[in-house]
Length: 316
Image (cartoon, rainbow, N blue to C red; front, side, top):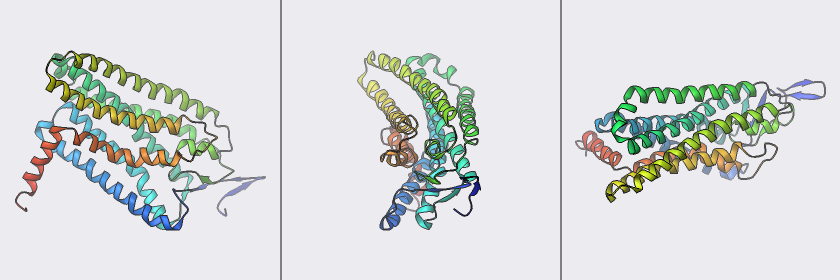
């Protein structure tokens, strides 16, 4: 590449090429239309969740406050990667500078890790509501909800800074092709010509501590929740609780499963399924999350009907 700098016998890179999803020219337009549709639906569904929660006074409870935050993080996470993918599919450029690449890594990790902490907080909220109902309003007051959401963001920011600052020290002087459609740490490690031991150790230790700890806390919350639910005598209440909890658990399994596949595999190997998994947690998961919650949530369905009647009944 003409814009790379030669140092001795090595070529120091100052830019990369994203391999994208496919090199077949016939697939570029269909892929563009497919991901454009996914992105538009993601914006619509998540924005609708936020609007319903903000405008529906009966949804002013901690569970929906955190759900609104989750919808916002899904919007941001998807917006970090999908617009760039759409641009590359349309222009076929696929070139990205190291600065742009690092910014993409930073913001994607920030929103993804913050979402990980938020999902843990949501499980604690359900635990408090079901297992300690008499103390729920005191424990999960609005001040506590805002503080917990802020803590999730601060922990996400601090963890992201650790990984990003270490990634800035990487040297790239070999291949300039990132085997993905966006910049992510595992793919950067694959093309780095420097020592990535510290980076991999950070992902193993920090990622394992943060991800593993959050997952353990989530499972512990649901163990106590299920014990409490099984003791309930009213079947209607039991089914409603299971419906709410199963929606959250589904989101947790999808999110954790895809991230663990991407970040906890051998960094020196590239598997054909990597891009599929990347598509899942960058594009599909932010689209599915609001659908999973709204389709199985009577309060949100009622809020949607009220919203339509209030804003569109006259025009119809």
